[in-house]
Image 1 (cartoon, one colour):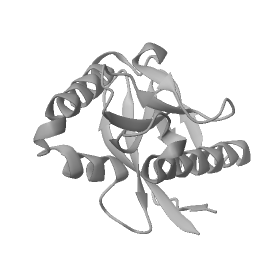
Image 2 (cartoon, rainbow, N blue to C red):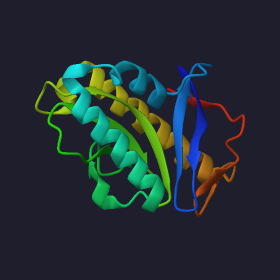
Image 3 (cartoon, rainbow, N blue to C red):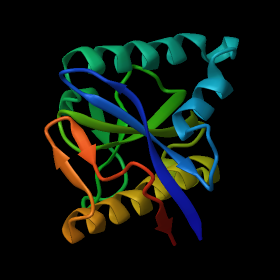
Length: 159
């Protein structure tokens, strides 16, 4: 069983970016992604495009057109839509104003399911999405415009 907490990365009038920290780790999944790829010369263009896309999302909103669905129809897992065939960053697009940025990696296979690393990131986001939805139903977490309230110090148990 994994423990997960939400960490606020950035908030603007248009959108709030969050990421997930697992098992008491202070470094979020997104920050792990950045550490992994910021100095990778072979993926530098793709990495920069991902960072630019996130900056645009913070400026204007997390609109559907910036993502392509991944995962299942029943969850909110999406990949950032850039013209890359090599690098993927997975997210939970909660709304036009709330984005939970996950981890990602090099895409060497046709689908994420064929990669143990990438499918692990997607499954983590799917599990977190389910727990977040349950917390919303229970009323312990609420989503209002561009803010998720009730997450400060909240620990989600992912099975």
